[in-house]
Amino acid sequence: MILIISKTASPADDLEDIIELLAEIKQEMKNNDIVAEICKEHGFDIDIIDGIPLEFVDDLEASAKTVDSRIQLNSELLNEDFEIIMRYAIHELVHSLQHMKSEGIDPYASDEYLDRDDELEAFQFQIAYDAEERGENEAVDYVEDLIEYHEIPKEEQKNKKEELLEKV
Image (cartoon, rainbow, N blue to C red; front, side, top):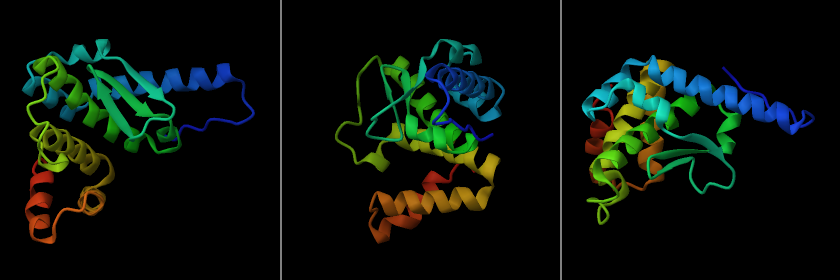
C-alpha cells in the first residue's frame, strides 16, 4: 500500500488518511507472526498492541523512536511504501515492550548503538519482517547499508551482518 497525501486536500482529509494508516499498521501487527513472536518473547499477549500509542511526528531527528513505550514515526515515512513503514513500526514495537519491562532503566547506555542488545533484538525482528515482505535480498541490502551507515569497522562487518540477519 502506498499512502498519497495530497497537497491540495484539506487538513481533515490528511488527518483521516493518517488515522486510517495508523489503524492499518496496528492491524498488520496483530496479524503478523513475527509480531506474535515478539510479544510472546516479551511475555505479552498480542492485544497489548491496542494500548501502545503510535503516531506520526514532524521534525523527528530519526526515522522512528520510542519514548516511554510510545512509538513515534517520522512523518517523512508517509512517503514510503507500507512495508517500509512497518519495518520501522516493528523495530519500535520491540523497544516499546522493552521499555515496559525495564521501567526506564537503560542497561546499555555505554554500548555502541549496534552493539546494544536492545537494538540488536529490534533490528533482528525488523530485518526478519523486511525479508518476509520484500525478500531476503532486499533485507541483506538493507543490512549492508545499515553497517555502512554506522561505520562498522571492516574486520567486524561480517560478524555484525550475521548477527543482524540471525532471524532471517
